[in-house]
Length: 301
Length: 244
Image 1 (cartoon, one colour):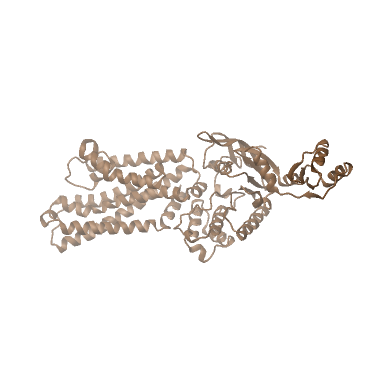
Image 2 (image 1 turned 120 degrees about the horizontal axis):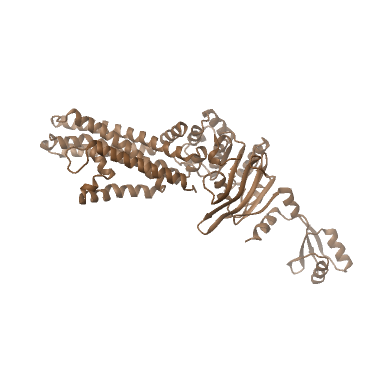
């Protein structure tokens, strides 16, 4: 994708810390208006990649562009990009509202916008006047989100925003991100748990050990989940041989249970019927995205 | 640049750190001025040197200014606020300059407070003890101007050191060990070299009749030199080093 057309562009991005290659020749692009999940196990290089994109760290190789430029070269960066890297980046002794004001002043954003955002993230009134050390984790997350939205940015970059949130906080965050995406913003949200963001994103970029594993629309990833069949039969070895002959590689789950990826119940049923195999159970496995995610990231481990 | 500066000044006003530093400064100056004002003999206090030293105690604000300057940077690294700060102002040189200017201004204000306290209380003690003022206008101007200038410059120096070191504990301990130990030893052993060190250069601005120290103007220039050097190193480090 051309540099100018992409909201975010990583091009051969590489970052080393001593002998550790945290980000390894990573390339991807985000188009405007997309909501992309940035996935990978802990230590995969997600946070480092985001730091490189936001100009907090310099790459050892390759380039990181937002809106076709280095973050450091953006004019009025908070008006283009809103980011939350850590939900704990506050001075504990500063009032929540004052934290936002200090950022707003630096970006020449009127104080009215601060109060508007405090209302939006439901931290207005007494909470805004409390010092951040008295905030719960959920309140800190919301304050950080408010900070990211100060400049009404087109691009939002969020690093593990769901970390540590309770179920209520998670639902709030999900609804919030959906409404932001609904406004046409580009959202780039990282997580080490696919399920946390599966309901929010329409694309995923999965990395592991700093390298790209897959960049794909979420529904294509979902399609991989379908097509596993669970079979229970007292004649497991015989069925295994027949499946093998049909080019299907079954995994033994239990003594008499098999999992057959890349198949459907009709086909397995036919194979069993022709081979006179008695079946006790034949089930289309719905599986989970998480399994696919774990499989994908486990391959390189 | 002015937006970054306003943000830095706002940050200084919105934690209780500055207030704590002001209170500590007030307590220390009261303690020193009262203790020395009542413990020095009448003969000593009528000497130009000792009377000057009593009234120039406002220069103690320099240590607090340095602390505030160090915290301007190291506090941001400690609490992680450096990330939102650099996201709002990604041109890091502006952040460094803004912090140095804000710390200089804060240091000057601490100096003014220190001068007002040491003059107010010092003069009160003298009048209670019936000691006549022996300082001329030049001495008074030096005690006032020197104290304010030294405090302002140490605020800037602290900000530069904080930018270069980043680690709060290391920066503060380093400054303390330097000011209380290293400099005094060096100055005692090698006064010809030691007088060019930042602490002794500062002393040149707020003392009279002390052997080996530089004159007022050379002392001020040397101190400004340290401020520029620390600021430049802080700038280079901030530009080059990644932020975790």
